[in-house]
Image (cartoon, rainbow, N blue to C red):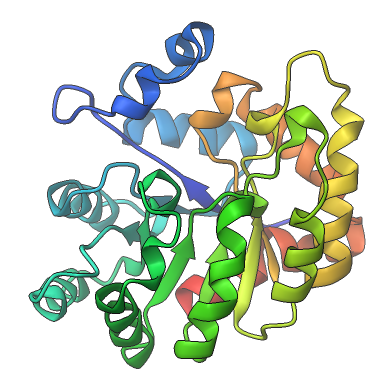
Length: 276
């Protein structure tokens, strides 16, 4: 079975501050408040038989984007990097041109769920930026929580050809066992042909006292609605280490997906989305 992990991070704390790590509960922060570099990723990949990865930027700066692109350029394992860019910037196209000089550049992500304005994405400048991504056939990762889902419908009314993916199944409130309106909105969003979903970052949304089986309600809902051609595997390593080891996260993913869909989920869907 081939595995393309479509969602992991790398960081060097001596180069940049990641304030969100310190916002985590102390025990969780301690698990990841250290460097995670290419050698660490290589060990994880070897131990879990990964065929490739997509590295997603965890810090919103072009400086980190170029740092990751350079690492990926010299790595056979990292197949692509999802970078950050200021979608409102008048120099957006120039920034994209610079990213595109590196063949490992495969998409853009903005940490929308940390914006003060819930409807940040509806800013006309952001919509113009998304139209530029769409025109250039550059993918966009939606990093959201359930309260942001209603705006994604509006994005696709304005930018219908944008190729997008919802990260971490939109971070439903699993700790509180809240299913709606997340479920209804994800069902409707799944009808957008060029919108995919990553089954990733799920254990991080759980309470330590909850049974692992609780995630089945959420993963089954995504599978039933998005189908086996629009879902993809992501570990969210090293953030997943706040709850589980890499191998445990991989086994959980294998358990929630029928083996007949392994090829699509673990490899071909991610390859088609990011690398074709």
